[in-house]
Image (tube, rainbow, N blue to C red; front, side, top):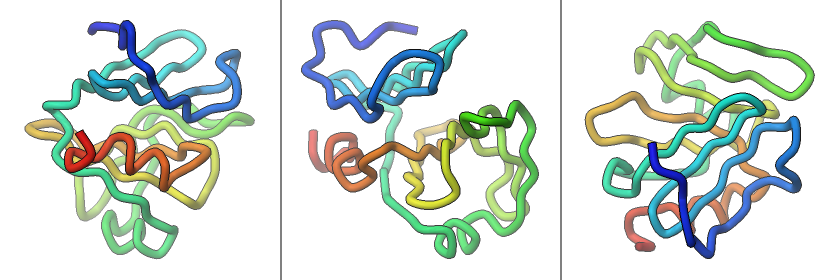
Length: 126
């Protein structure tokens, strides 16, 4: 995994302390948790879209969390009836962003500014 070095990135969180954070840079998406980080390079991103609770329910059906959950949100995997396993990092229960990946599990995240996040990360906006 490479860090998003030298990116004039769009920070999608207020602070990078104990809360999870998602950053968008020229090279892709970086999701930062208190004890780990993941980078999704732009070429692996097929599409990005904002969705509300109802749209999410239509996309995934029902689901069960596999991972951690608590005060700052839910992290890990979401096992769904329609889409299989989804990687997730959510800190609220609405205003989701769905990231479709090339050859890998989709991501579900909740950036502070979903529309700005979608514009910054969309393959069309490269």
